[in-house]
Picture 1 (tube, rainbow, N blue to C red):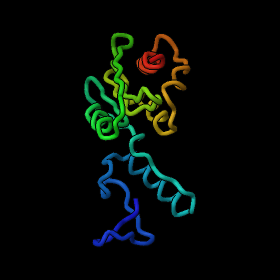
Picture 2 (spheres, one colour):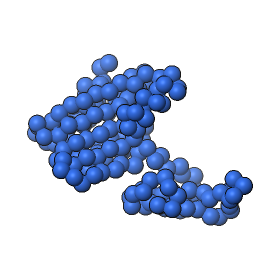
Picture 3 (spheres, one colour):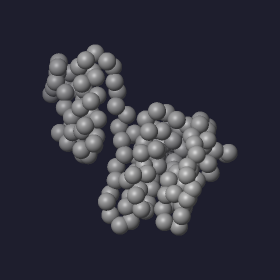
Picture 4 (tube, helix red, strand yellow):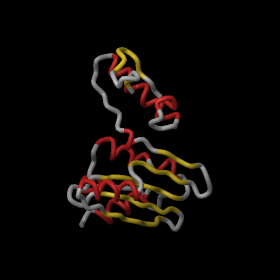
Length: 162
């Protein structure tokens, strides 16, 4: 969130958060950026992973996402010579989910949820991306049955044994 001048040099003690920096135009992203700036000003190093910030569309059906989109993941894979794996699932005949991951190390690249309470459900994936939790680790999480959160449980468990 550091500000640079017209010559590309950092402006001392000047930070920019929220819509003005153009990174993510979401209120909760601005809040996270502000917290990151406070940490930096307080000399506690903190780098905000913008890929871990979830987004939601309050439509019908509701949509939520975190991390890379499928085209972004495919582009990253092509540029870096990586393989990506895509899983899709359905839970309680209401919600659908999709996750993008690297099969070589289980890194979660992105998750998308469509259906009831999608905006509430995305946080588990958001936290997994923020904490660097792999599919191999998260596959052991237990989800109550029958619940909408099983859309994530199904996604993570379907990929865990590749």
